[in-house]
Length: 291
Image (tube, rainbow, N blue to C red):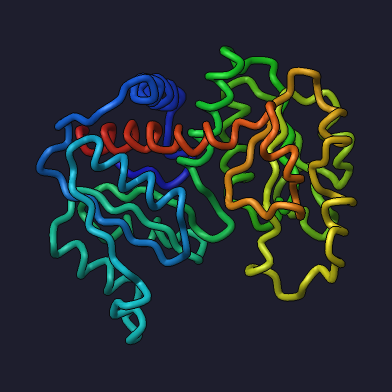
C-alpha cells in the first residue's frame, strides 16, 4: 500500500489513522513497533517540518531513517528519477518518503519500487499527511468536525496543502471555503477572491504562504501590501466566528500572509499542528509498514 493522495485512503482508513495518531499524540517516549525497519527519506525540495517529523516518527517507532541528500546525489550528475528509484529499490528499504518539485513524481516511483511510497508533497498537487495532521488538530480542538467551516486563504494556485485539505475535510463533514488574490486562484478548484466573505463566520482559518518560487512573474506587491489587502490581520480574524482558530502549514512569512499578533495569539494552533505532524506520520508509517 502507498500513500500518494487522499484518494489513496478509504473513509475507514482515514478514521483508523486519525484515531491512531490521537493515541500517539497522547503518549510520550518511544516503542519498538517498527524495530528493524529502514525508511528512506528523499527530499528534492527544502523541508523542515515534514522531513524532521517523518524522521522523528520513524525513530519513535524504533525504525531507522536514511536520508538522501539530493544536492549531493547522482541526480546532480544527470541521473533520472526512474534510475534513482531503481537504485534505491535495489537496497531494499522498507518504505520511501518522498518530496518532489514535480507533480506525481512519487506516483512514478511507486510504480517502480517494491516498498510503500509516502508522498511528502509533490509540486502543487498533494500533501496528504499535512491534511491528515490538520484534520487531527481541528478534531482535537472541536471534537466532531461535522458541520464545521474552514476557510483556506492565500496562494491556493500553488498549494498542495489546499488541494489535499479540499479533498479530505469534506469527507469529515467540513465545509471548505477557498479564497485568495485572483492571480493566485486556480482553475481546478472552486472558490473566489473574496477573502472577507470566506473568513466570515468560519470556525477555522488556514493561511497559506505566497509561493513565489513557483511563479513565473512576481506579484509586484510593495512591502506590507499583501498583508493589508489579503493577509490575516486581527481585523480580518474578527470576521470569523468568536471561537475560531488559526492554522498555517508553514513555513510562515510573517507580515505577509499573517500578522505576528495572529500567528502568536491565543487562537493559534500552529505549534500544535507541528506536534501533531509527528503523531500522524507515526500512524502512517505503522499502517503501511505493518500491513
